[in-house]
Amino acid sequence: MTAEEVVDFIGARLRQRPPAGVSVAYLDGFMRRHRAALVQLFREQLGDRLAGRALPSPPSPVVQAVEGELPEHWTVARRTHANIAAMVVAARLEDERRAPTAEERRTLAAYSGWGGLTIEGAAHRFPAGFPVPEPRGLIHEFYTPAAVCAEVARVVEPLLPAGRSTPWSPRRASGASSAPLRASPACAGRPSSIPSSPRGCSPR
Image (cartoon, rainbow, N blue to C red; front, side, top):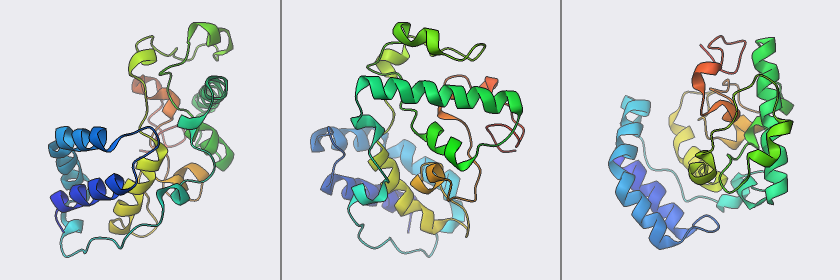
């Protein structure tokens, strides 16, 4: 299969079962606008592994690929609490220069960005010395729905070497993946603040 076929396959599957709150028209527009970038991404990340591969079999319902409730469906209070908990864990990992435990991975995976929330009202709960979320995140920081990430992971992971998973996999969030986290979601806006050592939030 080709990178173009992978992108078209993902788009077709998502169109059959769009994530909650996402219309088919919006999804079609998104895929049309970003198709070239997505194709290039798959070419760069998968390379020759696409050659000679067949497209995956039809998916099971997307919601079954994501364990538990989806953060994008949580209340404002619950999202805020989860975001702060993730920041506290990320700050602790940075101080201790180590990789996260399975439970800490789940806490980090619950970070959903600050889009639609309030930073000012939660600032007193932020861990001391840790990068503070930027105000522009209130407008722009809406992360890709977990259902979309799960479906991309389901399509892409069969192409990866044994024992590896994509950065978007629910298995990674649950601690089942053998591959290390690339970065804490709470550090997404400030990658330079995260240690590059494998003992920190990022692998070598």
